[in-house]
Image (tube, rainbow, N blue to C red; front, side, top):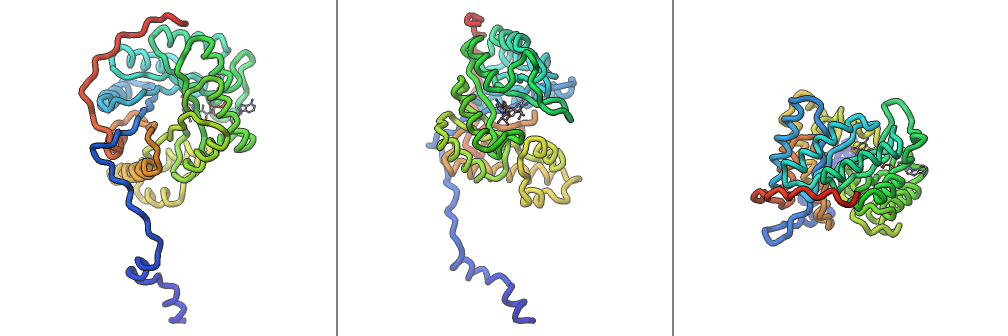
Length: 327
Ligand SMILES: Cc1cc2nc3c(=O)[nH]c(=O)nc-3n(C[C@H](O)[C@H](O)[C@H](O)COP(=O)(O)OP(=O)(O)OC[C@H]3O[C@@H](n4cnc5c(N)ncnc54)[C@H](O)[C@@H]3O)c2cc1C
């Protein structure tokens, strides 16, 4: 009995070191390396206090010179006016390049086209084109006169003006896709219809994203598939979002946050380490573009960007607003 217990003990550390697998260190990226390209996502604020929080976040992140910043569109187009107001303020008051999220759900083509034209006229040149989700508890049905899927919206936008278009991708497959291959085929069709990159849904298992890149390459996709990074501080909120969007939450992540419900400070530190490990692993695998779901808070994104080698730059003069010519 005692012998069995001794056999089940792990070998001593030195023996493990001699016999176990070796891992190389993550590469050290010094001053000579070009920093990665970043983009940041915000949601439109509902209240004055949230508006203040958003603009504090924007001002803090602006000197990191992201490639673009995007503003989400509430489920069923519920934030249309607030998304528009936030995006236009970004055009007018910052040096940032804004991208407006736009969805197909619950609106006719004419309504969606009108929103897109207003963006073009306001100087917005980048749209994140999405199908969108139905209101909670309902299943998706295209609007009878609407764009049925994101691929149709991409094609429609290209008829309106030469927008730069980003679409969504799902390393773990979109939950309503008929199959993984059907989902990949849908992604390829969105890119072929005129989108220039995809941003992925958030994920926690880095190898899932890297395997997804292999599948994209095998499917003939050569546009950038930018990883969407979600620094997680709240497990309950994460579980809700993950269930809705078909993202798996690994046991190790649950274990790290277990028992921290009332300990905000430790949760934020754990969140920073988890996200930093994730982006460093991706960077070690050659990934040099990252999209951050900021949740309108700058601190985690700012420090993870620093770990990636991104440094604040002196302010740029805001570009003159583009002329509303091509719409
Ligand atoms: C980066 C990112 C940003 C997002 N921003 C927002 C936002 O601001 N507002 C918001 O409401 N939601 C947002 N979402 C969520 C998104 O709207 C949902 O995930 C939605 O369910 C799918 O949108 P999509 O653009 O990927 O859809 P699509 O690409 O149209 O695909 C949706 C599903 O339909 C399937 N499909 C496609 N074409 C067909 C067809 N012809 N017949 C049958 N099935 C088909 C696809 O395989 C997939 O399963 C975002 C998601 C991501 C990843």
